[in-house]
Image (cartoon, rainbow, N blue to C red; front, side, top):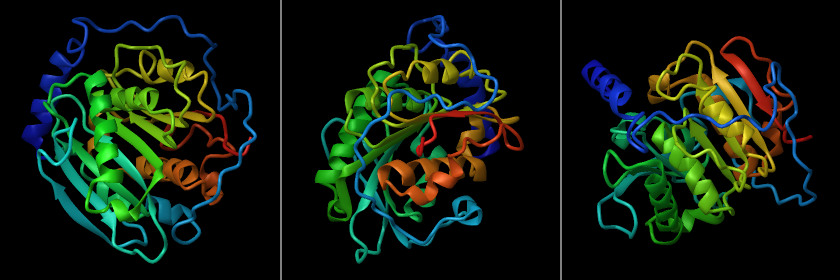
Length: 310
């Protein structure tokens, strides 16, 4: 994305995104739990089910989860408009290795006034780590989070059942993510589709705060200097309301702004990959990056989470 695009998006988003859904800036209701200052284990009641593991790739390291590319070769496939009901179009990134079994599937939505090409770096990054990823182009650039959530679910159904790579996908292992209003749409999709294995909203924006019905493991990543989706008003408030999620995490990137998520970032990649690996693949080798909860230092100002191993 060039500088003119960044400047245009900054001006447009700052003026319009806060009014797009309801005509005014949402006000977070009183939090149901006190704010934590460290990295507590915010765990709800434990669950007894232990699903099968789907390890894909070698044992992870700090170097592997922050690398620009993982161990899997992948291909890029364009999905034209009209390919399936309920969504516009998109781009699929899929591992080409068909000898190691099927892969988990992820659909990602961009934010307000943003084409999916502005967040395209997540596609190759995740596909090279062993996921089939579809970068979604929303029906319009101005779709509100509720509509984005519906389109994410529709695209996921297409990816797992009708796409040319459906034979590489395990339809029982699916996840969603998105940026800004796409992050708000990610929360909507998680509420609509409780069978998802993981959700990762990035700097999410949504006027709705009722997330008590979400039962999907959810990691919310916010930005310390975000003035479009301020963390205290949105990311943290949403996290506090994920009262039924069996696993959840909330982290804040030091010095980052709302547009930080549009450019390749090793810290974002590390935690997105680890969360997807842990819950889509049930790969406990990635616990080391999530548990015990990382200290809020270096690139992070906040990390709270349930810690997958308890």
